[in-house]
Length: 206
Ligand SMILES: [Zn+2]
Image (cartoon, rainbow, N blue to C red; front, side):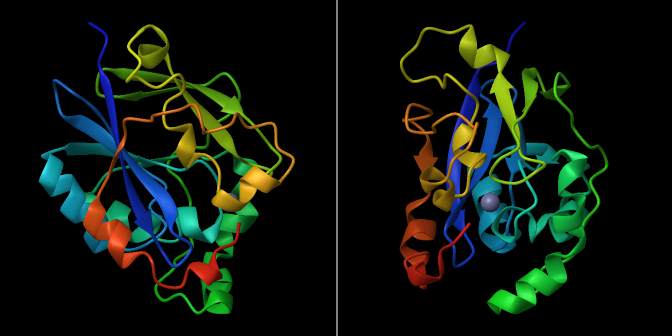
């Protein structure tokens, strides 16, 4: 039986990157997409929604998306899937990159599974097809929800949280990744996180 995807956004790091929780409505099994940092807030959102996290997904290797992945893997004891291995150099250099931005605690990370074009990823009953979409970074991937595509509801996503696939700065860059503007309009944004995240917006980058 196909799942019903739900999503919520947690702005993290001074870049206010949209870390995303995705989960199946009925089973409450889910994943954390792009935990760049602020792990206590991510875990608070997980508790608030009562989600059982099955895995961490990474869309690409930039610091604001992947800087907290290694520590969150340890905290939750779940595997990391993605991005494409072409971003290995970014994931290997996260400590140096974090230091350059003045960010504390970013750790290098090697995913438990690299993803490639045509792969499939499951999160509980939810299923995603993988599109390798180099451009924003060499190893960027898109998670395309089969479940959402099979639904006609206006509140479902045409693509599963593609909001999480691009850094905000990516909207001004040439990229083969699909626009996030049409996706997940009903997604929850945790207000407390948003308020806290107004700090240091000037630090935003890719
Ligand atoms: Zn990025």
